[in-house]
Image (tube, rainbow, N blue to C red; front, side):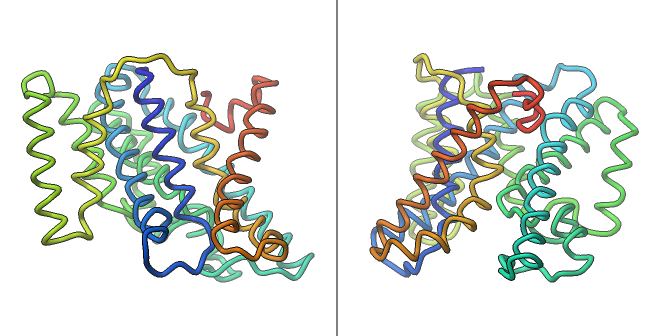
Length: 293
């Protein structure tokens, strides 16, 4: 994998960490960097996933089985572990960490499987959507009938895709990988720049899509060497949100500056995941947590 993709993905995940901090920001420059800019992260990850499917995974056999290992299992572990923590905090410590789900069967239907809404570990909805898209691709391109065991329950009892912008950007990543040799990169960047300006003027809520695509293309082919960060990026994506939920009640008792409180949430969640990452490197069995990465 290109080092540039490793860097873009790491940058996108760190942006996603920003948007899950607890804060009272409502406007201003700091609000933009903490609440608005980070929404570009998931858009970038969606494009990367489509691009990597076409350039790396498309020709591999048994796509469905591989994606169970790399996406479904880490997703389930990340959400089931958070579910147990939530139940422990609620029934043992008397602290309710939920603000979306009720303590009933919804903890399983939506909390774990995300049939109709974001799971109990919210950022992992992206992994859920990407896995279902790969399941559909495996069904169509490789006649993988086992994928129906996953697809039918989600389509019948819930939603196939929670966020259709993820699916659209995934497709754009595939199209770019397929046709980029036929299109001038500079011309495409100019076009995306113009589109971004127009969208920023007339429909700013959609600005993240052309801008994410612009920066993906801009940095994709920059040559440099980078230590592999795939496992760390994935673990950070999977576990930063529950860490912030746990850290925030503790930090707010000691840190009264709102900006420092936000920084502490970001820094500590990244630092703790890094320590977790080092632990997973010590034993190959822990690779299951990051899908074999």
